[in-house]
Length: 137
Image (spheres, rainbow, N blue to C red):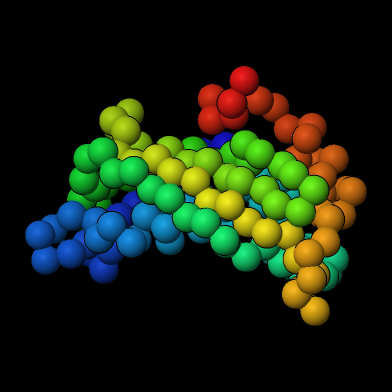
């Protein structure tokens, strides 16, 4: 799915470009939109006592984004394991690739922090969604 975001002044650095660490915030916003697009939110994860902490984050920067740019952030789950998942992202502006990356998330019980499986209902929803260009063949 694609999440759109308009760059605000506070996202930029003194050189007038988006500060590199803000791309991780953009990834987070895209993940939240992804859950909503799936018909779920983080509140559902809370109700199931599931937390998905980021254990790895990676971003390759290709070109700068600037104040007022409208970004299109493509996001999808590209790997689903027993106790982890990986989201992939591509950030574009007017079709031009600005950045791409991924985050890996552990699946844990939100109460005790122990590794656990995703609820079957959520796993089924993730496995049933239509394919995207981000998924590896």
